[in-house]
Amino acid sequence: MYIVHVSILVKEEYLSSFKAATIENASNSLKESGVIRFDVLQDSDVPCQFVLVEMYHTQADQLKHRETEHFKNWRAAITNMLVQPYSFKKYNNVFTG
Image 1 (cartoon, one colour):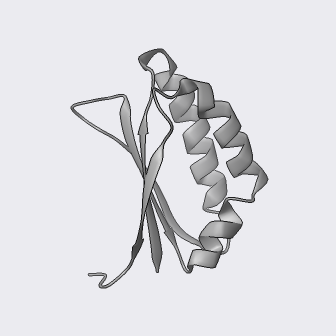
Image 2: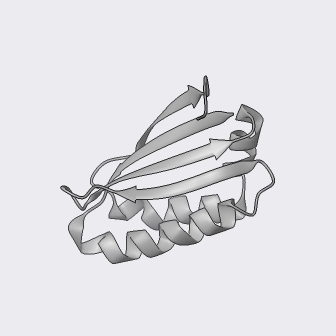
Image 3: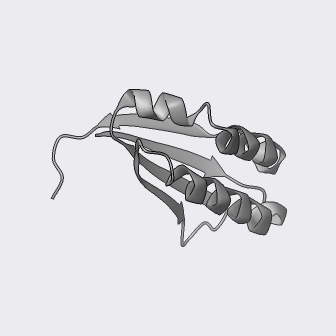
């Protein structure tokens, strides 16, 4: 399993729009054969801070995801909504309980 955590800080005035665009992207991502899970998490103390937890079968599946129309549309839609460019960390799964 290949896991990506995406950290995103959104401008407050775009919270609703960001959530809608991101939920649409996540829903479409779950239709991809290589996607195991796609969580959208909002920080309970800092509502403008989000983490996307994306789980793929392989790293190649994550790269295929980045070429999908829905990902490209999401990235274009949210660019101006962000305080700063999003960052991400990639992980290899060691154990799942």
